[in-house]
Length: 369
Image (cartoon, rainbow, N blue to C red; front, side):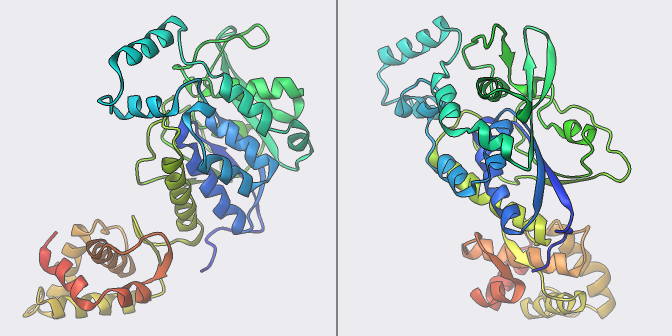
């Protein structure tokens, strides 16, 4: 595989807010790190700021372990099982009186108590390591008291202030309002859920944005000439913003890793990760032979195959904007899905085809779907 971006250049990361979906960003970071990309700055909103602190500290294995084993009670003062049932709507096994008590307590306290998250930040985030890092960390939050967005450079903050501002950045509306150093704060997403502008204003010209599609406002940003913004984004659902469950987090880490691999190496596919090795001519030949074998373009002239059948196939496979290589990859992916093949690996077209047989591809072509 060949990297599709220049590994000799420095890169900055913009990390979107999105609560429990943040595990996706750790998976993506792992792939970027393995590819040898040099990250010189991170800007994060909400969970993006928390992940930014972990990234700046540089221990990808520790970050992955933390997310892979997360549970509700590490973030909120709740019972893990009851919170999981409540968010999933699985209330049949929960005593109605106990449920009423829980809801009443949240209302009385005007939000969920996030003392566990405050303690987690203090235990995990080492300000000395962040200050000594050769990576800059920018934290975006919103001061409710001052009614303004704050863009803070982590190394300029004292230890306690750094911990507080990381918590402030991630202060979701469902959390109980508590003052920090006399002021109230809200999740940075209320003004800027994806802090691209912070990096641009500080002179970074190669930026990788890792999306979570979290709640919040996307601040309009003008991308200057000479500045490149690349995006890594999920094509599958990452779960709810309060779904702090280990199983979902592990899925998100895996998805983030492979989506970043797709970005880095130009892999084909939507749900699979295909390292395209065929030339356009080899892909065209494969498609035509498959069509003939399946009997869906028999009797057509060569011109009709290329001007009618192949464009129709590309449209059906949602590959109209690509070439024959893209159409072949999507056809192989459809056949792999039908056969239930494992998607979580990088494979070439030939390797994927060898795991099936011609009939799997023929069945997709004959189905008309």
